[in-house]
Length: 117
Length: 116
Image 1 (cartoon, each protein chain N blue to C red):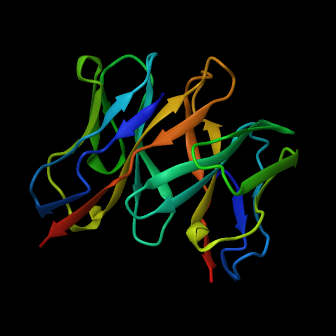
Image 2: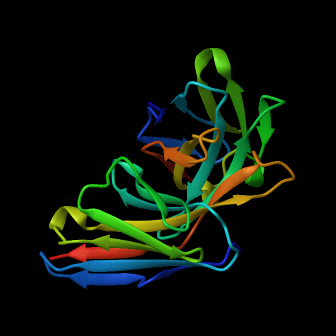
């Protein structure tokens, strides 16, 4: 268990409101990711972080921002929620599982189901 | 750009039959490749991964996958499917390791249904 906690696990919010999702890890991993999962689209990368205050956009970053002020927390903010952002959001870390730097894998949190009404 | 294609959205097999799920990738360098499984309402679990060496890799739950560079493929196989294998399967490629901005690119998934 990579010790990833997502909060909240479920949220319903109204269109136009800001929403922040939190991902917390306990193992000091450098890389953290936010994905959204939608039927027919698989998992799409929103933003990712490769260190404190080092973040970059993924393929579906419009309408989202992130912050990482400390290693253990990676926050995803929907600046003004829209119905198209109704989705399941997964946080992930890249965890080394072997003796080499190459031997890593993505390890996922349990997800946050967000509904925008 | 890096990408992963899973051509089959849905696959139905009978319990005990063999299974092959297809995955094609686009990546300029030697890829790191992964297969994940997601049971209904659950998170994602790693089945197996390929970094280098033997192109046939073994994973958990009796799954294996073969890396074929010439075909840019990393197909997942299982000789005999169990009802508990019904789930959604995702292929992924790890990209950007040399730039220090490593990320995982996923395919759209294949949903497996198992008939009793």
